[in-house]
Length: 274
Image (cartoon, helix red, strand yellow):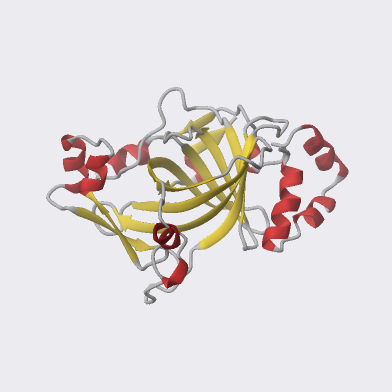
C-alpha cells in the first residue's frame, strides 16, 4: 500500500489535509515519491539505509537499571519506515531496525516540527505485548471512561517481567529490592488524575514501492522515570494500543494488541544514517 494513498485515507480520519501539502511540493519531489515511497525523509533515510548509533548512552542507561535492549549486530539497517499521523502540526516518523511482530521490534522515533526541524529523537525497544481480551480491558487500554491509559502514573511490577521470562539476575539489576518501578505520565497537566491519550494512525511501508506494510490506529501515552541520580538520564515507557486495519493492503487483516516499548531520548549527533 503506497503512502500517498494512505495519506488520503488518514486525512479523512483525522480531518487533516496532507493531500494539499503534497500538492505544494515541487515537481522534483513529487516525481521522486512516485517511484519510491521512502523519498524525502528526515536525515536522508531510505529503506536499507545503514544506521550508525553511538551506544554509549544505551550502555550507561543499562548500568543505571534501564529496561532498554540494545540493537544487536544484525539490526543496523532500516527494514521498515512509518509515518504516524497525529492531530498536531508536526510529523512523527519511525525507522524500524527490527519489525518482528512477535516482540522483537526496535525503532528510532523522530518528531519534526512544522518546519521539518528535528525536535526529538528516541531509540525504542520492545518490552512486551498484551492482548486485551475483555471489553473492560480494551476500554482501559483505550483510556475510555476517564481512566486507564492516561492515568497520572503507571507501575511496572517485577512479577510482570518475571512472567515474560526475565531471569533473576536481570530483575535484580533493574529492581534491586523494589517490587515495582513507578513511571509518571509525560504529557498534559501533571496535576490531573487523567489525561486522554493521543490518537493517530500509523502507516508503515516495508518496501520502497509501498506494496508491503500495514496500517493501524494507535492510541498511546508516554510515561517516564529518572535513572540514577536526579538530573541523569530519563527512560520512557510508551504504552500503545494498536488496532490493525490492514496488512499489505488486505483489509481483512484485523486485530488489537497493546505494546509496551522502552525508549531513551538521544542527541541527534549520536546518530548517522547512510
